[in-house]
Image 1 (tube, rainbow, N blue to C red):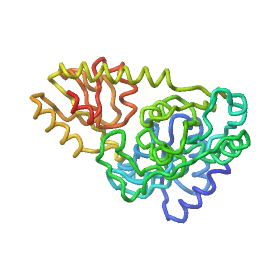
Image 2: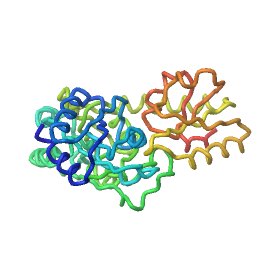
Image 3: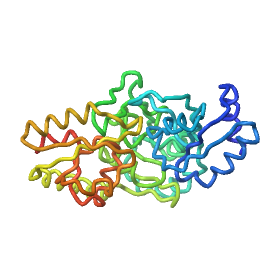
Image 4: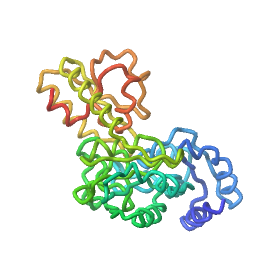
Length: 330
């Protein structure tokens, strides 16, 4: 594990003797090897088996309870803003994933059609691909823009689920599920965006955040597809949720206790606004948000003050889920 040498050096420099290792599901197969490499280097390792959804989902409190000196968080970049300061030092190992966008770009030029000015974005795992993808597109006559989000020190963590993490993305061209600042920065200069990555979550989120067309370059399948049909479907779901919410009375305002998603002030503001409209509202706090945790609660509608992924899973909750800014439409 050559890539781990830098993290080991940083851990040793910190003086930490015992660390909790945290990684997303896609890297769980490497956890044991990581633990063995740390132990071989004289560092006691505890492996976290809890789900990990991003750098907003630090297991620092658990690390401290387990007597660890440090949290090694693998697979994500440090956020520019978090709702709570970690309770012990955290080392972020970004871990780039191997992929090659050239085949999909070469074969997908027809999908770009007349779009000449292209905004290029991706997730942290594929940031290193931006330059090569940019050069390839430019060789095909395209103008390529890689934006940088707003200054991280000026971001506002209480602005709502879409902009709750404005300024959090570390790299130019990097988007998060809750931060599309890199795209917004160049939106008025491009004809369309290409999102490079895996899974449709980030591409859908981008399509909802910008007014320009979004194409999804799937680094697993090697395809380049327009997100318009998916985006239109999501817009219809959002509209239907708002319409259903207009007839609801009992609202659950959901917040997460994850350190990078904990926005109690926003939830309190939402609760007050709902009550001013004659609705009943309760703030519901949980770590991993799932339908089974709401069993026994009599609720008509949910307001998502946590992660944008919750709205993607709305069908599982069997009730409308709206965002804080949509309350004004009730």
